Amino acid sequence: MISLDKITKTFGAAHAVSEVSFSVPEGAFLVLLGPSGCGKSTMLRMLAGLDQPTSGTMHFGDTLVADGAAGLALPPANRGTGLVFQSYALWPHMTVAGNIEWPLKVAKLSAAERKNRVLDAMRMLGIEMLANRYPGEISGGQQQRVALARMIAPRPKVMLFDEPLSNLDATLRVEMRFELLKVHAATGATAVYVTHDQVEAMTMATHVAVMNKGRIEQFDAPDRLLSEPSSAFVAGFVGTPPANLIPIEEGKWFGTMADPLLRGHSGHAMVRAEQIEITSNDDVRAFDAVLAEVAPMAGRYLVTGLVHGHRITAVSNHAVNRSAKLCFRLPGAPSAIFDNEGKRIL
Image (cartoon, rainbow, N blue to C red; front, top):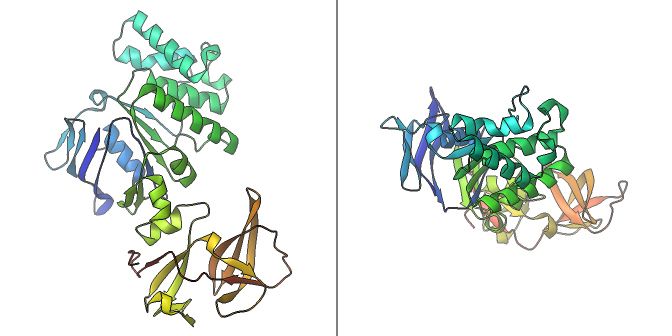
């Protein structure tokens, strides 16, 4: 349904997006995941038609919606897309029903069709009782539902979400993730969702594009990002907690302890938190650590310590005595090795 070929967007000499290519089938839920400034919102704006690519082509199905080199771009209103902003962007002087109806009026639908679609959208989001209220009279979570209803009322083929849950508290975010997935399943539309929250990506996506500095580091299914990260950036960004990236130099952990399993490489070794054993005893594979923090999670503890100035996290089934000596024992072999440029080599 969505196909991009070497999409690039520059602002002067700065490259916001560089040669991004991917395709997803109809009905997919694609998440653009990455830190602030990585280019994911710029990508979404180009999909919506609010920004135009400098070069590269973009198709929705068989329709060419943008060709940067040729200067061709289909207007946003003709792309069959709906967009939900981070800020909700509701008209304060319009009722909930009026906000939802507004894009249908712009599209010149009949009054009867507008009424039916508004009712359908409100029922889908469970906000029928709010129809005559104004945005200032409802909660943030309810405003988000109104913004979603307004987006789905025109029945777009492509739904675009620009960090729509970032203004909600943790409990509401979990609830709204479920609501978004229900809307996606009910409409059958193709979704593109921008976030820096990798938990949202892992729980919602069928496809994930991990972005960094305007490029895609890895385009894959969520479970593949965790099991087979293709770069050090992906390994250190995805996961709860993300994998430890331990510096190695000429086959030595932290540049101090030689290990033939590292095969003389330099760069970073990926070691998952559950692979690290917490011990108070010194041995040949253990490093003294300075306790930084202990975080309870799902009946276990994430124990983070500093080893030679690097943050290392391990998983423990027991609470850690803060006054006791802390050592991290490394596994027999790392899960992966990345070179100094972050490329996976093993």
